[in-house]
Image 1 (cartoon, helix red, strand yellow):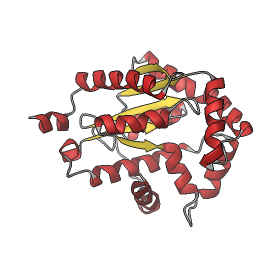
Image 2 (spheres, helix red, strand yellow):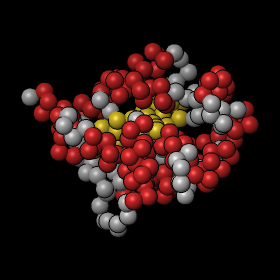
Image 3 (cartoon, helix red, strand yellow):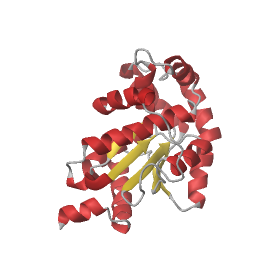
Image 4 (tube, one colour):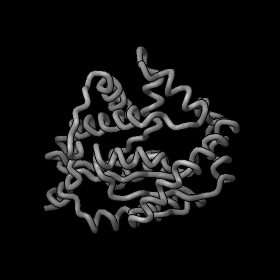
Length: 240
C-alpha cells in the first residue's frame, strides 16, 4: 500500500483530467466493491482478510487522504487536515482522483499476475463513497461498483473500538470529540448512500458486532457468492 500511495500522490498533481463519456475502467474487467460502515465498524480489518482470501487490492480512501495531507508541497494538505479534524467530508474531486490514480497504479504493478492481466482487477474501496455525489461521480467516471459491503453495528461498539485504537494509532481524529462528529457525518451523509444501493439490490449487510473471525466468516461467504455469480475472467484463465 505505501508504494502505491507514493505513486498516486505524485500522479495526482501531474495528470490532467480529460472529459470522457465512458468510465475510466471497464466494469467487465474491473470489479469494484465499496466497503462501508460507521467509523470503527471493522472495514479495514475485514478488507485485509479479503486481500488474503481473494487477491483484492485494498484501497482505503482515508489512508490515501492522510498520505496526501502529509505530503510535502501538497496543495491539498491543509484542506484535508481541516476536514479530517472536523470529521467532515473532503471535496470529492480530490478523493476520486486519488482513488483513480491508485487503481491505475495497482493495475500496472500487478499486470504480470494472471488474475490481473489485460486490464483486469479486483478492488475493495474502503470508506468510500461517503456522500451521494461521490457515489454517482465515481460510478460514472471511474468504474461502476458491483457490490456494497455494509458493516453494521452500534455506535457504542464503534466508539469503544476507536478509543482503544487511539491509544496506539497516533491518529488525531481518534478522540471522543472527533469520533462523535464522524458519527453524525456518517448518519447524515453516508447512510443515504447505503440506502441508495439497497434500492438497487447491491448491498450485503453484515453484522460486525461479533469477533473478527465471526465477521470474516460472513464476509467470506458473501464475496464467494458474488464472484461465483460474476466470474472474473482472470480467475477463470488461471484455473484453465
